[in-house]
Structures are given as structure tokens and as C-alpha cells.
Image (cartoon, rainbow, N blue to C red; front, side, top):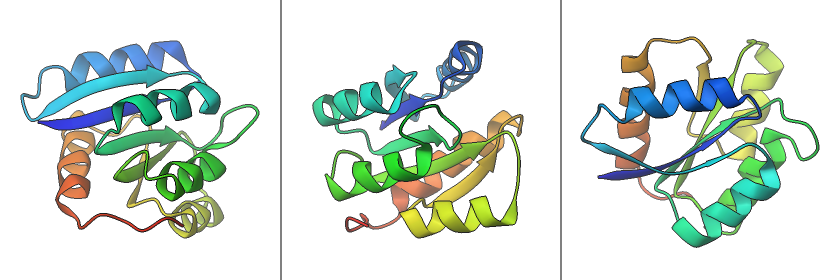
Length: 127
């Protein structure tokens, strides 16, 4: 099972994503966080294989959270998630260490397959 942490400041998005991923027997959602601080705490405790991180969060944004999760080896991989696609955000997410960039509203199968693909990549060194 691939251990996954979901991070987004929108509770309805988190709940919907958790419900969708619960139907995939390859994936185990080990935590959900609505802030970067909460995500870091959960990741330090659970050490997920993959964290799905919203880039646009208040306070500590998803770019910095990605760097910290990878630098602290709290998560094996990070998938950046955003409702908007701007070329610079994609570049910044990859520079921060994200394995991939996903658009919110993408098909469930895209999200599940991105999680599986990320988990199959060699572990990332801290960014």
C-alpha cells in the first residue's frame, strides 16, 4: 500500500479526494491536513510515501512545504496540486522538489496513477 498525505486548505476538496482514493486498494490515506504546520506534524509522525500538496495555502505555502517535507525526509515524494495552472507555478513546484504537478478537478484516475508513479520513483534527496 502507498501511504499518502493529503494537504489542502479546502475541507470539501480534502474530503472528496479522500473518498475517491479510499476506493483504490493500492492507496492508504494516512492523514489529511488543512495547513502546512499540520501537514509537517502529520508527516513527521506518519512518514507518507507521497504527499499531495496544494500550492496556494495561507501562511506557509505549498512551495515551501514541499521543500520542508523533502528536506526533513518526512515524505518520500510530493505531488503539487493547484486549481490554476501558471507556467511559473509549475516551474516553482518542480524546483521545490515536486515529482509532478496536477490540476485540481483532474480525473480521479490521473491522481491515483500519479501517486503510484511517484511512489515507484527512487527517493528524492532534500531540496
